[in-house]
Amino acid sequence: MQQKTYLQGSNYEHPRLPVVHEAGNGTNMHDPGSSSSPTQDTWTHDDDLLAQKLKERLGLRHLIGESPAFLAVVQKIPEVARYKATVLLTGETGTGKEVCARAIHYLSPRATKPLVPVNCGAIPVDLVENELFGHERGAFTDATVAQSGLIHEADGGTLFLDEVDCLPLLAQVKLLRFLQERQYRPLGSTKTRTVDVRVIAATNVDAEAAVRTGKLRRDLYYRLNTLPLLLPPLRERRKDVLLLARHFLTKYTHEYGKPVTGFSAEAVQKLLLYHWPGNVRELEHIVERAVLLTAHVVISAADIGLPHADEVESFHQAKSKVIIQFERDYVQGLLLAYQGNIAKAARAAQKNRRAFWQLLRKHHIDAQRFKTGAVFPLDNQTSAPGQICPPSEW
Image 1 (cartoon, rainbow, N blue to C red):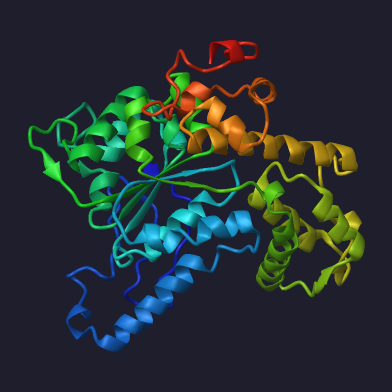
Image 2 (tube, rainbow, N blue to C red):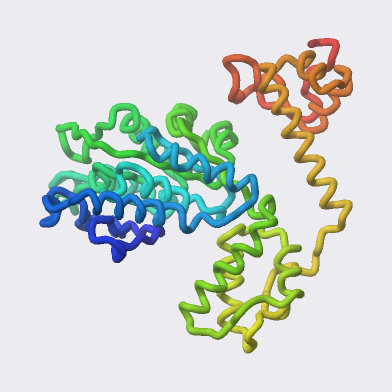
């Protein structure tokens, strides 16, 4: 079975940078930087400098934005890329987790080795282990030849596991063992194999919630969450909407040869007022469609086809959402700083304990989560409305 990957890469800019490819059964991975390359022995210092510049370009050129929330993530990527520790990318669908994974790979010492993306949610349940670990000849009825898995294909490079929460629990157990020991055993084999692979995982669901519901193993979550990066949704990056829209406009006018030069003021307003539930991916598709269908040089508001675009938030609604988010983040930050001590957190906020407790109750925050040794809540410790201890029990 062919496992389709969704990250696109190119080695046209330099012959020793690898192509990001489709990986699957019987697919040979093209690795221009391997020892088998005929030009490997002629590598020079100038080539090193050029490769480094290209790595930076390939890694960061698609990370577009100027909002503080986005830049806070981007600024961590070069440092994260230096190490081979496991990375967990979280964020809503369409926020750019795949682009972020590619940036980490191309900025890492593994840039000349394969990047193997795997959409875990697209693999049939009964084929997951075979796709990841491979099999020996005769391992099952149709196994007429031995086949290496995606982990083997990524040896020396990076394995990107998208939608990792979709893996069946048995496969999660085997993945956990591989992450711990960097060893695995193909189906039907009696021999253990060792590989050097850096793993980047991603999920668009609340990972802690997935742990509580049993969809994601707790021990696997802890192992994956060594270096966490949370990508903010586009609605929290309002100042980046127009920047991204112009980027996609340039991309698709060149791709389709359309003489479109920009957006009208009404179109800009429409883009900025929309809440973008599909995030950057939705914005890209909207701009691409507008470029294709517009009959004008400037894209008008009528060319921007948005669902429920007329449902604009009022000032009061928008303000209330911001206040709620601020209160939740502020209270959780204090509890984290004071390790769940409500009295100290209330004193730092310059509020009396009862008023601070009311904030906890309002936002359903369980202070026990922030106690030393209990940063992550146990399944029976999640709070529900009305279950937070009153001040008399502190």
